[in-house]
Image (cartoon, rainbow, N blue to C red):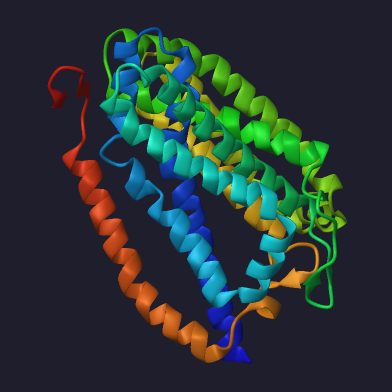
Length: 336
């Protein structure tokens, strides 16, 4: 039991790392798609899409790793989550597929380019919305009876989950705006800078709303954040958040290119850590513990060996891709 306990928590950490990495990498390129209607010209849309062209499909590797890891090492959690969130997860996957098709076909036609622009925007927005709705449904809790999902077909669709869905769309748009600011010059750069501040304000408003609303979804969350001595352990989270907010707004105001992007990513990292604090030690709140959902000892060990090789390889080629395509994007000559 000791080995299973230790390995299950190691695996919970690895899956959380994969999901967080997906959010901070794929979030900004979904944000670029969400902001497509705000571009002022075809050239600006081309520049925005080209800024993520070399890395967008590699970013989605982490989603596969997180979902595949959950299936392999927490099969009970996978079964419960898929039963509860079948509709938003399927819609998210279809949106990602449609978005990928639009990404490729947009460059191969002039007559239908506008249609694929709309498809790119729609796929990006729907994927972000469904990710946020799924997160909200997890936070509000999934009904489990005798290790089976016992809720209804539409339990995932609530005012809280809709709010978290919109929050993720707005937050990804902020990441997209900061990314384009960092990677471009000229008209599109200034357009995204104009959008960054209102998007930052809206993102912070949603973070505040969800943060206030979350403790009332489950009394355990309330105790974790506001009761002693848990309050002392969670106090650094809002302090870090305030510092990140300061860096974000000062970076935008002073015309910096890099600081706003990493500050916006910091908002997501800190929020993700906050959710992790609320969830621990549950993998599917409010009743399914990490240890309850873990696969047998032999499966955990076998999967861990392969993953210990796979994750460094993915990190290496991801880092290499970002290094090769570092710097600003020239609309005429590519990266420089």
